[in-house]
Image 1 (tube, rainbow, N blue to C red):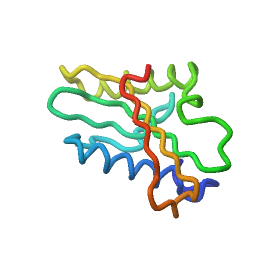
Image 2: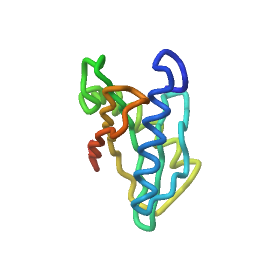
Image 3: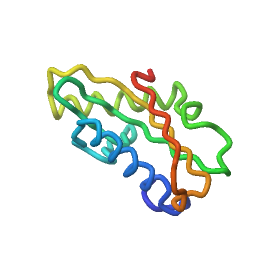
Image 4: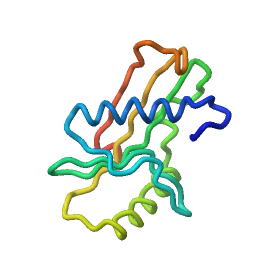
Length: 122
């Protein structure tokens, strides 16, 4: 989410995950990539792989975990959006879909958010 009712929590989480990926040698090639099918939070690549990353930032008020909220319908929308990205940006790299679940109980004031990064989530 960009701004909106989450008070910037979603964007804050995406920035946190982007820094995490960069610290592991990835380059963020796109953030908030939108099509008519949906949005991919982060697109990152290194020498060997291309990652489509769904970031789910959760606080105390969250009912579902981040990974639970990436249901089959959401996965299909992400796949369609990724296909459009790949049509615009052809690559030989093997794409994969990752889910980054960030637990931030005090929202953007959380000092040490807990990240669970799931590679090849679906």
